[in-house]
Length: 360
Image (cartoon, rainbow, N blue to C red; front, side, top):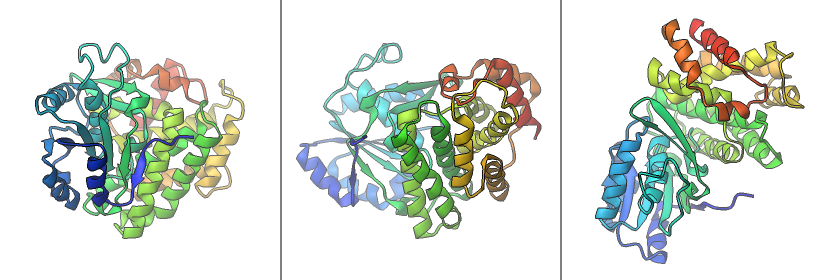
């Protein structure tokens, strides 16, 4: 069982955490919107150092700058607050502060005694529950680093932070959580524990989708927990082909991460159902049916119809790009994540899927 990451009942417990850990100067990695919140106002009493140069798809170069600031300012605790970008950045910054930055993408980083607190302000990435950090180098190359020491010491799940989310971001982040749960459930690395988390993520999404989109307190609370459970699921299994294929879409097609991955998952799921003759792990198609039932259908086909209906209801069109980009996108797909997929894909399969996504 995964036990790291104590969930605090209230942000006012932060003072106790600082006292327990003898914290003198916390480093807050966050977006500018977090600085308008009640929690940030509370943090201002603690001699914080703020780093808010966080782009929507975080960049390694910015993390290098942040780690230097962390050390120059003598910081001794890190808070990552926001969506996946600030939290994934905080994970790297924490370890880069005491590791050789020139080697941290080539060699495993060693842990340190810097404590961490993550505060998600979106319901989607599940970054507060995972051992992975995803970011970009030189604007185009996606890097995913996994390290058990990325898991936080403390987490705050405060659904009031979701109340100001724009509608498009609300739709896309929740779809990211749903895709995490679906991909984890059908992953070749899934086990009983991960499927239980994924099940909670799927059922939580379906139960709270309407309330979340309409910005109700109950809907926000339910979706925040669905996202958290989805993060717990992928922390065990990782993601699969939909996430492996979405990053080039996000960086080149003007769609957010959740929009990109959901569009891809729709086509990938249909592709797998239509190609039952391809090599698949034992029980894969049973898992597809189980997912369909969790979504409210009787089998995988009905589940896919429900999933596609959500995309339609959310008014999220499929991304578009020039067909000449498809070979480039195909060449950049992370083969590790393809290895997690329940059906074995070749480069030709990936290319065919991209063509279908962009033709819809």
